[in-house]
Amino acid sequence: EVHLEQSGTEVKKPGESLKISCKGSGYVFSAYWLGWVRQMPGKGLEWMGIIYPGDSDTRYSPSFQGQVTISADKSISTAYLQWSSLKASDTATYYCARRVAARGYYYMDVWGKGTTVTVSS
Amino acid sequence: QSVLTQPPSVSGTPGQRVTISCSGSNSDIGSHSVSWFQQRPGAAPRLLIYTNDQRPSGVPDRFSGSRSGTSASLAISGLQSDDEADYYCAAWDDSLNDLCVFGTGTKVTVL
Image (tube, rainbow over all chains, first blue to last red):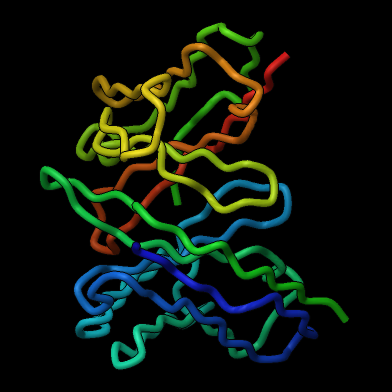
């Protein structure tokens, strides 16, 4: 069974750094693109970016370019989302999701349970 | 980044059929397939429909999807209390950034 295990809840202060993780199992992790999605409290889903763990090719949404870093370590089937200096506006739940293709079209088939990040002084 | 437009809310009584619309543009829905997700309170999104009208195994056939031009819709027939949740459409965008755009989300209420 395909599964994405995300790291636990984080409570941080503004200006601190953070790296959250998403570990894949049940499939060849390096062979599928993995995306990150933000959901701010009470709001909708926002696309942040995507990485191909096989060669770490990464594409960012313009809204998040320069704000976060997406990386992956295929040797341990884990992708990461990282901030160097958190802001209160980074308070949200972050989901990772696997991208697959059917009939030449993409979709996100399996999602992690989400990591809730709270940034407050 | 652009978003796909959905009605904020729809409601129905048990057993009724409700539909949720998703409006986009030539660069997203007009060029790529649409997927739909269900998100119950406190839970992660769950894939309901992919490539416009396909259901993953385990999704009841009460859920159906369609796409026409730059719009798509999700229909829920035989509405059940368990269907009360937020629903999001999504499509990829014709950009160099491999961008996915989501709908604004629709809250389905079972009266």
